[in-house]
Image 1 (cartoon, rainbow, N blue to C red):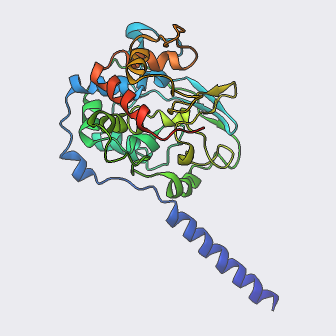
Image 2 (cartoon, rainbow, N blue to C red):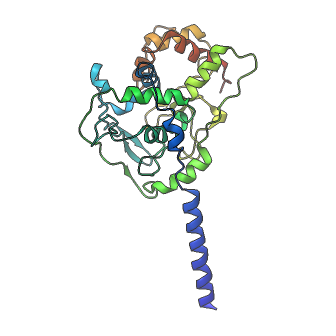
Length: 305
């Protein structure tokens, strides 16, 4: 009887392990299909680069000016699960992504899978980038290849068990990785608001900081409180509510939001601060129509009180 129970237990464990590995298998986009889209424009890609905030995490800490284009990585992101370090994503063939193909880049950006077939941690906001248009991804890739090659690798992530088991991220993705729009805009929404929806929910990844996460921060974004403010992931203070609520942007006009993104000045003549400084500096590099679209969308989303 004991042997039979042991055998049943072994079979169940084997089936469970098999199911786990099947469910957590990294999913990639087909390389052949992506190869047909590898014809991006670097000039357009520069806009996507600033919109996506690539240098905010991947440039060396405190880099300014042209040094912002040297994507050596190394910036630490301290969380309750450990410390993540932004990697070198310069075109260096040894320490960066210089040997990657466009398919490698697109799968990392939109599926969270590296060229070795490993899950990437969602500290990298592929949960937003998954909504990007393929032509924008191709343009960004074209621009990335023009940047300086930088030697040196960032430190390995410092994560405790079980968060250091990448395979488990596959289950997380099943629950939280989706390319669907977050907000259903009303039929009366302007074209600018609809353009802004793509920018905010996709490449600009505003929700990654301004929306609280479910399950004590370990889950996906709480879409019921989309852009309603969230704890600072680094543990100090709160990331503000940017919905049209009274304690958010309710008293700001769309023009005032766009002006803030362009200049860093609030309607009360205060100035941008904290981590938003880098974001605002990136937004200032965008065409005015992008800032106006973002502002229109932020005025159109549901208020979160």
